[in-house]
Structure formats: structure tokens, C-alpha cells
Image (tube, rainbow, N blue to C red; front, side):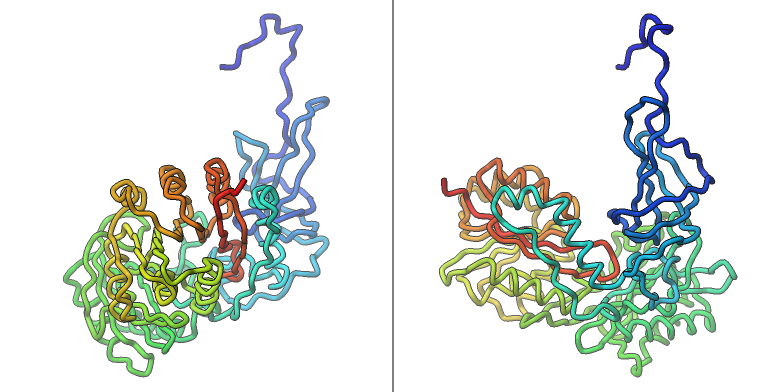
Length: 474
């Protein structure tokens, strides 16, 4: 607890060590880098004579490093020297700024880097890796990797999610929420999803406007490599004739490549798309088969899967190469999802155990194993840490971990180190949590020996990283 000085005259009050800016004020500043949300970051000098305090960091959405801009302050943190602002004018433009492809850009909150030239996006992502992972990699003598470009920068997403409702003009749209609001932005014209998804969304919008949308809340569309589309209609009511009619009408559109239409009822308040209820086929199939590299995968209506199919194939191939597999190996994959990586490795080893906590994903993994005919792959539905604790005698030769953004559960690092696998392959979608986990692995004697990075999400700040760790030999 901070104590007040005994003699107030001898210890005058200190001026807050930050720039004296308020909400609504306009400021001019230069941007030096991008933050985790893709906003440009610049600094304003601290105010107050002799404070020696930190400068105020200002985050400006849609501004780029190297630009000088005028911005309007939207929020000043009461806890740290940081503020967020809206771009007003650009007084000096970056040479890396490019025209955007999407009509909804700047409103939907999705592709926040679409105005940055693609080579510059890759450079910015490598710089972020250097900032977050550089110290851990340098300590092990491993270079920060360049980020492998996506084969496609537009039309690459094989999944699209929409909120259904009226926009500001009162028109029913398939849209997304304006950032930090519940105003709907029409997503028609989105260029990052596969064209078959855009066509299906446009047709469904027309049907909903003509026939009525009933209690329809969300729509999720997924496409496979063959151009077939699975549509999930999320409704607030189980027996809704208008939603049923929409499903039947959409399912009849063979020209759109509709493989199936599925109903999911989710009545609970909130923004979560899916609830605990089942997925029921209204028309056609209730799942899709897709292909990644040489692997066939079963994807149910609620499945989580990489949205960039071509880049996922490159990532999976890189995992297989970096694992340096042997024919006698037992591989364990934790957080296995639908088992795409496990099946990519299966033909090169004796045995693979895929551990996945989510019941739906584990069911998809088993179906994928059956599709691929991989008799040496076993799927275990379990929490990763709990599975390790319940299998103390399992000594895998190689371990793959592909955790969510929060990284590994704390118990996993020592549990893996105790088994002394020859190699641990860490696939990460969050450099910050990866950096934390690399520190934990170093403490138990596992150091990076190889690093690679992949851009699975062009026009966003997200980076997929692959690290090989081996036990320290000295």
C-alpha cells in the first residue's frame, strides 16, 4: 500500500507521468510499429516538469508505421500510459499503404491490415516474432524465422461466420458487429472468403429477405477443396417454420454447391454462436469431407479447423519434416483437434496417439482416421494434462503440441520433460504465450533447435509458429 508523506510541504504532489490528453482531443504523432490488433502505435512525450515518466503510447487503428497522422483520442487508460485513438487525417503516408479490396474494410473489424502491402505484412510479423521470441531463440542459437507467405491472400478462408439482423438502414443482412458495438455491418463483398461462400451468403440473404428469417441468429458456412458448401443455420427456436423453409430453399440450390444445411438451436443470450445443443440436418449432409495435403478429414458442422487450407498443408508438411521421424516412433499429439497433423505423420511412424478434449473434435478425429484408413492412429478424448497424468508410463519418442491461444496448461511442461521425448514440436498461434512456454521448457532442459513461421491469416496480425525443442545435451 502506498503511504502518504508525513510532511506534505516537504514532499509536493507528483504530476502524473503521462501526456496530458483527454478523450476527444486531437493529437499529431508518428507511428513506429503495429500492435497485436494491427493498429499503428506512436508516442507522445510525458508531461510534468521533472517527472521522468514514460511517454504515452497511442494506438491508432488503420494507421501504419512510418506515417505521421492526426488522431482523435477515444480512451486514455487510467492504469498505464496508454491511449487509443481514431485516425482523422494522414499528413505523411507510408509507401507501404495500398488500396483495399473489400467493401466492408474498416468497419467489419476483420482484416485490419488489408491496407498494408503484403510483403510489409510479412516483415511486420517477423518483427513481432523477433520482439516476442527473439531472446529465447537467440539464447539457443536459433535465428528468428522469416514468415512463409500464404499462396493466396484473398479468397483463402474456407469458413465464414455471420450475424443475422438489420443494419443501420434497417435492411436484413448477413454481417458482423462494428468493433466495440452491436451495430451490424453488411459483409457482402468480403474478398477473403472463398468465392463459393460469398455466393452462398448472397443467395441466403436474398432468400431471407424474401421469405423471412424467423429466429435465425447466425449463419456459418464452410467450403471444402471440391467447392462443396455446408451451411449451419443457428436459430433461437427449435420449431421455426421460416428457418425450416430457408433451410429447404438453400438446400435445393445445387448451382451453389450446397452439400447440406444443418440447424443448430441456441437460445441463450450473448454473442457465442454455438451452444451445447445438437446439429440436425435440414437438407443433405450434416458434415463435409476435406483434403489437406494427402490427408482426408471429416469436418462436422461445429468443427474447428484451419481456415487456410493451402497454408495448413504447408504447415503440416513442415511439422513432419521438422519431427525427423523414425519408423519405430510412437508420436503423441496433444490438442489434436480433428487429427490433421496426427494423420500427416501416421504413415512415417509405428504409432500415433491423438489427444483431444472437445467431444465433437474427437468424434471428427475418429471419423477422419477411418476415412484415411490409418490403423496406427488412436484418438483419446481427454484433457491434455489429465491424459498425461493418467498415463505416467507412456514414453513417446516425439510429442506434438498445438494448444489454443492461451498456450499450454502449466502442468504439461514438467510432465513432458519427465518423459524425455527425443523432440517436442510446438505449433503456436500466439507468440506471447509461446515465449512464456519456451521459458518454462528451458527451465526443465528443453531448448529450441529449429523455428519456422507461417502466415495462415493474411491481412491480420496473426502468426502461426513452429518450434522444435530438444533436451539439452550439456
